[in-house]
Length: 256
Image (cartoon, rainbow, N blue to C red):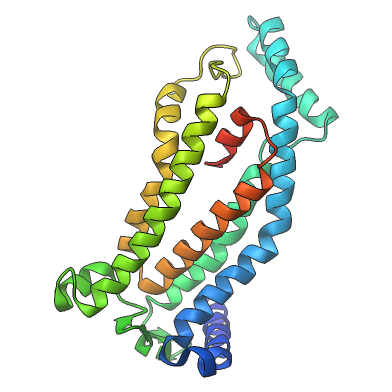
């Protein structure tokens, strides 16, 4: 793990050196944004595949509903029939999870690199870098203690909160419109009965993007930059990939 962290820290440092002529003191922060964009670009083919899978699953809904009705009294037979249907149509129920899972290593590496005072037995020089005076290894509560809610460091976090709020509001409105346009069909489980908790999930779905605010407030500033960049990318990407998708499927995909 130490070797991987050292290599990752070296990569961030190399990007920062490359960007220094353009961004000067904010070069390391810019390197994190660039690194995030490269990760998302690498994962984009999986996102496209997940979108195709979601569209395929949406088209299968009438057949799925028929199977649930046909085997309502035999949950095991129903589950087997659903698996066979997905296999015949070459659709994976888990494909929507892959883009998020593939990003996790980069995020956790960034989190640990900017949380560790030592890397590979040496002092972590990246912790001396900042964004407009806010240390990249610092946290929001430390920025508040340093100068209050409108101090120089806290203002950086306020800027990130503002971006997250704008993106979350965009996602909220889009998801509300999609849910409003979706047919009112109750979500069911493998036994054909209403899935427990799905009613509450549907109510909370439009608000889930706002939970990102808590993550930004909790993690080191470097990791917060990753979250904000990735969240913004996701909003744009899903708007494009799901633009021609039926409302019900797109609404479910918006929180995948």
